[in-house]
Amino acid sequence: MDSADRNRKRLWKDEQRAAARAAFPLSSEELEELFDGVDSAIEQNGCDHTLRYTEQWLAAHVSDPLPTLTWLRNNGGCCDCEVIANACDHWEQNR
Image (cartoon, rainbow, N blue to C red):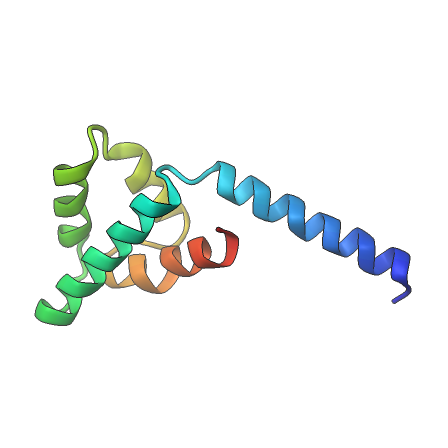
């Protein structure tokens, strides 16, 4: 791969990350708080393979949780442990 190809690849990756960031349903700070809160609840109580802790956090912090729940599911967060394993990973790679 020559330098022109590397530059095109880098630009493409930068564009993909920017598009991912633009799709975040909450600010990066709020997403970090969400992931920290859900992770803490899972560590204390385990995952029951629902979005119980995620929904509890959203109910306490967000007026309309639907966009965030949709984004989480679209990024592999179909239960609390997957929110941490998949959606959090997507956020960390693109923030």
